[in-house]
Amino acid sequence: MTSVDLRARVGLRLGGGRWLVPPWTAPALIFCAVVLIPWTALLFLTLPLHYTANHWRLAWGGFDIGLGAALAATALMVARRSPYAEVTATITATLLCCDAWFDVLTSRGVSDIAQAIVSALLIELPLAALCFWMARNLAHAVEVARPFLQAAGFTIADNRLVPPPTRRPEDPGAE
Image 1 (cartoon, rainbow, N blue to C red):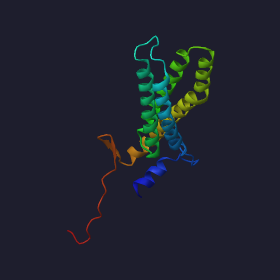
Image 2: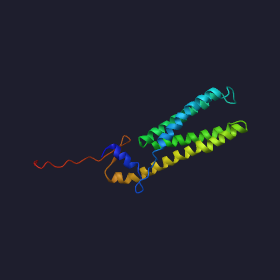
Image 3: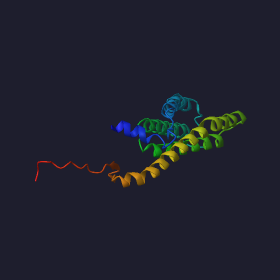
């Protein structure tokens, strides 16, 4: 069995054959990361030079660059079926919640506040919920698999799962 086969089997829940993380999530997160690129550029160009905070453009643009990197990292980890997807999904979800929070609270004027609330409710918070859900499913899968792996002789060394040593059949001619 190849490592790809093993990763594919780990990606399926016992019994139902459903994905721990649906296959469409990686492309969806990459799409979000790519869409965030022109949005970030637009922020750098259109946000007011002076606001009640210093370096306003840099703060928002820099945050969105970090969010885009987190989305892309989560998409990559999910596509690779990496165990680090749990960590990147949690980071991405947290950044999405922060983005929604600060977008709403720093908006001025009725139309800006309405736009921030709609964006939070329809984009940022649902994506955050998806990322938190993925992280929970991945963490649960590891906890369910751990006793079985330990019983089979697997160990962890240098943050890697190490299979048990393979036994070589005795040489029939050896004394």
